[in-house]
Amino acid sequence: MIRKNLQLLQLTEAMEGKTTLRSINAGQRFIHQDEQLTHVYIIKTGIAKCFITEENDKDYILEFLGEGEVLGEIEAIRKQKTICSVEAVTPLTVHAMSHTEFLHSIYTMPDLNQVMLELLATRVANSSIKSARQQLYALSEILPQLLAMLDAQHITFTKQDLAGYMGISVRSLNRLLQEL
Image (tube, rainbow, N blue to C red):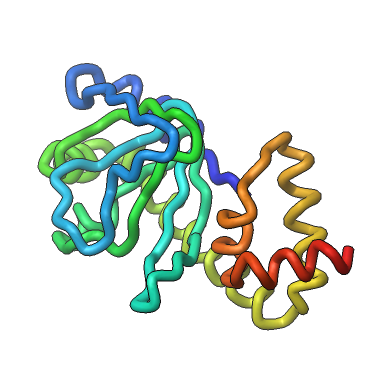
């Protein structure tokens, strides 16, 4: 449920002088959907949520990201505006790196390039699995699995976040919770 990439974090921390540390408060949105970014962020500590806000103002949470996960890499590589918004769920400390430095590092550091390829491939696979699961299983089957994962990781999320992650309304989530 919460993605981590300690290998990328180790590589990032070895890149002295190429990143700056930034602190972000819980609840603070630091990447806004459809904006132009100038930096890539690698999470040092904390949890962030990536989500898309639809035209009806409802949020769909793509994933929760933890230590070593990267934000803004697709936008840097594709030189495009942001696909989604990112908000700190807990206080965050991130390594910030300019797009120019990030792209240069990918081209000149084979280890970083390999880790980024694996990370992107994993995200595509995980998105496919999540989408298939949501299509194939009833929400009443998915919710207990999701709650068990959260419990195993000792994490508590708001009902709004759980509903957003499942792609349903809070009202629907409440009905499902009552049925359990």
